[in-house]
Image 1: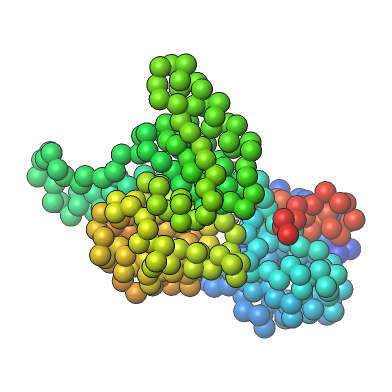
Image 2: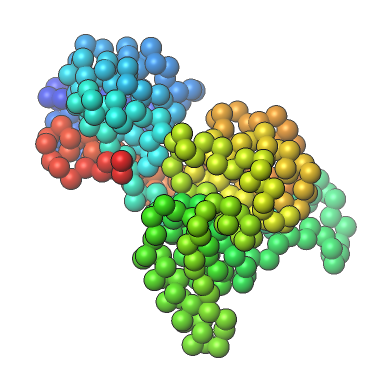
Length: 348
Ligand code: DGY
């Protein structure tokens, strides 16, 4: 479908987006918008090349597409100057390759922070308190009355949250858990998050004033320390060569027997086959997964495990967050094409 056919800049949008604001932003920047409405599968590289065609000034694309250096070269050859991912993650984009070809890359930080943190919390709770298993039990008509040991799960209150990655989303999740559930926080990140530390300390002082145990936060020296100490471990780090299979069989073995692992980051952060094996051997261990190593597929055996909760990469799927992401992705392309310096770019 084509919107604003006489626009000055030709921009392609590779999927249906959420809300109307994104289109107003592009039309307001005098863009002729050509949008693919097929949701059946991601566009293949040859379909993307065809869509770019002879002339394309900018692209609003998806994390399911591979925007590697050769695709950026193709975009550049068509006069392209802007590529914006409808996502905060950009592991599908060769940012260095884009820069080499003079294509500016945008992403959507901030728009999905709270929604993603909320889903991390939902997955932690659903896995730790066995919500999905218990729901299936009810629907199967198996409930015969209250029992002291029916679906025992883990307590969150007063325990320790471990974070791998304490950027925007990790910090939001930690604050909800620390303040709401009185949890201590141990995190590993290459950079200290001083704001997070101050907020948790302030919450700790508030608890102390009320005569309760103050909560604590500590930056760990390494990933292993977090895995050993935490009751709930949540992954919020970027995917790159150094973080692929960050959680492998050896590191899973360091975790507590009844720990909960949450992944709302990127699937390949976890060795999924190793996770299947670990969950099989340790029925008290639980995992809540929003992302998978080879999406949309899941590792063999994963979906049979009762101690794993799986959802289809929907951590940011609230109307507010997705509207915000689509609007920001469009605003990035509009900003780049118009030479406005205030567009959102990956922190590389
Ligand atoms: C992102 O933004 O990177 C998420 O994976 C999709 O919301």
